Length: 116
Length: 507
Ligand SMILES: [Fe+2]
Ligand SMILES: [Fe+2]
Ligand SMILES: [Zn+2]
Image (cartoon, rainbow over all chains, first blue to last red; front, side):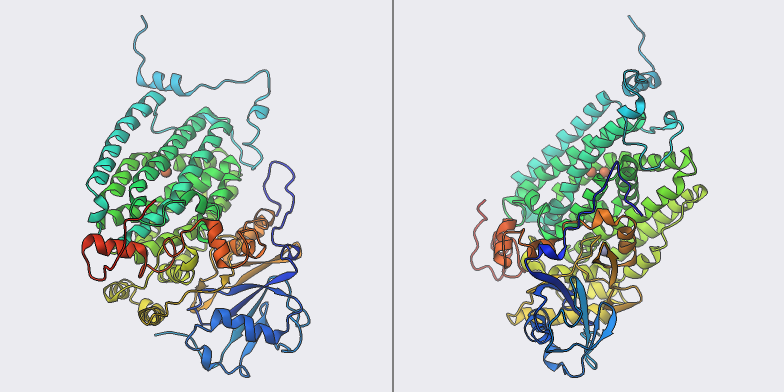
């Protein structure tokens, strides 16, 4: 549907990748761990290795969670933009198919978050 | 000498000031009330149930205002702020001044614009009067809160914050959306959905919250605004009835606007839900109870009434019914996460409050929220208060961090996405996605706070630069209530334990 407007309504997206100074926006969510309130967003270079995302970026957001220390990273399963996904740790975000405004989610079997 | 006119003629002479223009065709004089597709056959069918004239308006409002200002002045002179239940309560007022008062001003502008653009004079006059009410509302609110600004943090730059700070982009973008719509959509958005259906969920919590917590200044504002609100609600209902009765082609358009704007308003009110259940030391009712009374019951009766036009309850009402058990807890969690970047204080509830929450939310609080909150509380008591160090993904439509869960799984964040023009857009819910999908051009250029920070448009990199750009007084406006200057001052004034130092805030 086209927007209801008086005249022409140009499409002016504000968050195109070209506005992020060489980075792309990537969001990461840890399923069922809602003490960290929402998926967190990061501006990251497309060439960053996936291992750096796991080792340096994700901990800034998620390490305060009491279950963080217990994560067995070998057992973690991932989704990328809603599809099951096996990341190549040495490859870059781009090589892993992670694009601008992609959402990466991870599940930690046996660790279910803080529930009563 | 002429005879005195009867009321009806007098009203007519004082409000029906339009004429058929001849130098320019009518549709050029009123160019904005046809492009939305709403068909009007007879503007004279517009009914104004209040029949207010300007002279009566000035007289009546002037008297009301005089009384209100006298009460507010007395409140100031007697240091009324010392009689509130607890300084935590003041955060509800901060949220109101930062988030709601600027919307009063936006409403003033919006109704002034519709007061120019409707072809029918009856509708124009009614909008002009509401426009004046809204201007008075923002003025009296600023005046009332100026007293609190002398003693508490978090008030001083509310207008600057409204245009910049992340959680305030929720109400701001809501009203920007309405004010950039056509006149008929604006009336459904603000006049009907907000004023008629949702206003009780905004004003009753704040005003009864004020009453329960000893804030007589805010209570008097509430009373003084009540008669205005009654008029606003009537205008909203009249606007929608008029559209529905004028042409059957209007029905699907109006239905889509109702669906859109009740959802937009509901998401804004999620901030109110957290205020009600967490900020008020003494709570008149829970969010869930308020939702049941003011939406499910009152709103249900309204939709029964509108059924004869073919209008139905939005199909997402079921989501709201499920979410009423969770909304306030999730939003408080969001605010708690990002309190370092907010000009309100948050805190973890004490045992009495947690027990109240368990009682009000027997099916959800202990199961889904108490463990998280008790963990946070323990951490804070051990000097390790959790603050998020990162920025959240935010819904492209409602602009709230994506901290809402699937309607049928409270342990899982609800993710929705659309592709538009080669880019991805993320949403908190199906209705937010549907609003975007219908008019993606409008929402793809929304000013999303995290993205703007990352793009370098908010003062620079890193939290301190951003907070400076916001004009926060660091360590005073933001962070937990525990340890704040507000708390220290309160304890000092009230002679409570834990008062160590603390000066009256200089500003
Ligand atoms: Fe108002
Ligand atoms: Fe109003
Ligand atoms: Zn949303």
